[in-house]
Length: 337
Image (cartoon, rainbow, N blue to C red; front, side, top):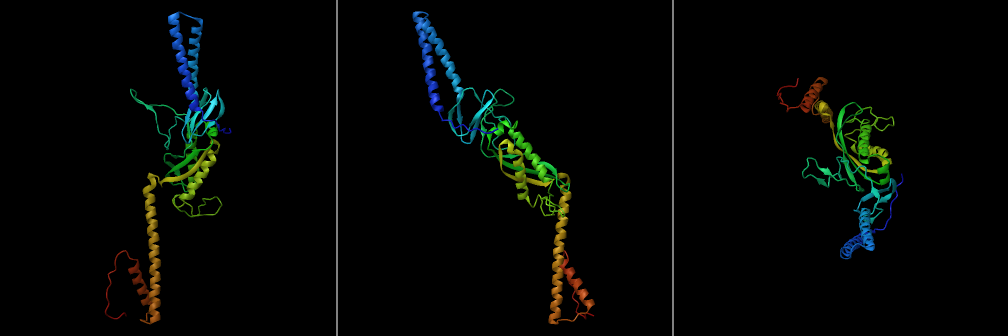
């Protein structure tokens, strides 16, 4: 359904003054006709004036239903006897057909997001608060923060992940008429898109994993490529909610961790991998230092070592350089042989 924006004049104040003036005149007519009939007896003209004044009071009170006030970044989707007539989007004081009805199917839906705050509650003398629904649709940018999801990554490891989605309504007609409840629809599509994207990535960088779908292994991961993953989630959600008149401004990962049942094991695995990488770096550095020492000794001809003594020297240097504890040297004052 195509959105129709009503460019009506902001004539609400003029109609309000007219209604007040009409009610005052009608009440004056009722009072004057009553006084006249009390002093002069019943008269057909006086009775007619009283009936007409009563009808005018009812008529002007019915007209008050057409007075609408809009704040900035608010909209009213109006229907008349079931037919969509248009949307009011600009702030101001309007007068519309008194039988027009404002529709907002998500008015009473409360999600874990900004903007869903109960403003009017009646709690006195009741166990549960009764909320008065507001049929105005907010055009402001809002943030949806659903509960954390437990999802298996591409390697089958269960992880917990949460996202915050920033969104706003750009087409009120689609939001109201194309889906049953646009807030619940957005929430479900966010969870679905999150699962669809996360299962394509490993938690950490893994070999022989293709995350882009081009058939070539890459280094994409949830932990190391969070910006890429977030942009992919945003595009996925936008494609799903396009028909609901919703624009996804941004999506960001707010929580990422292994599931509790494997968190301890995966931590040990990460620690072991870090230790191995550190040991490899230490060994590479030690070998380079030993090679440099042997080359300097040969260049300067400080000492002439045979192969057996070179092997012993290399062994001792590697023990000193690669050991976890400080070495305790033994000084040999005698001959090397």
